Length: 102
Image 1 (tube, rainbow, N blue to C red):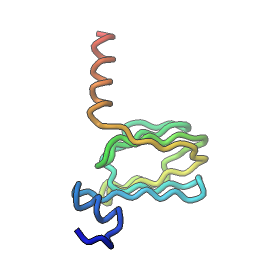
Image 2 (image 1 turned 135 degrees about the horizontal axis):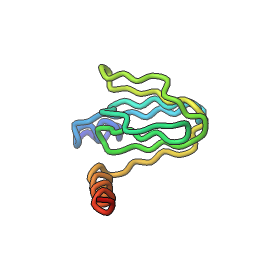
Image 3 (image 1 turned 90 degrees about the vertical axis):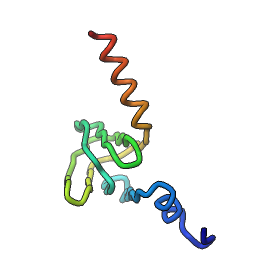
Image 4 (image 1 turned 120 degrees about the horizontal axis):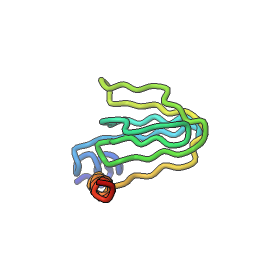
């Protein structure tokens, strides 16, 4: 592996996935590599991406652009929190909750 490669280039080689998050002034978030928007309201958006579930929190959040063709989402509002979680962890958590309430 070339030592001059960026972290993004090394990550895409190891996973085969390229994903970009661009946060502009905590008011506009562009996300590439999106598979689906699982849920959203004016305070929380949950997005399924190639690299896991991404949770975005803030105030007055809205989805400004959603493109399935380019796998891109643009979220605008007052963004205060971004976090990835493992897809399998979230799926198992959902199954556990559904089992409890059956």
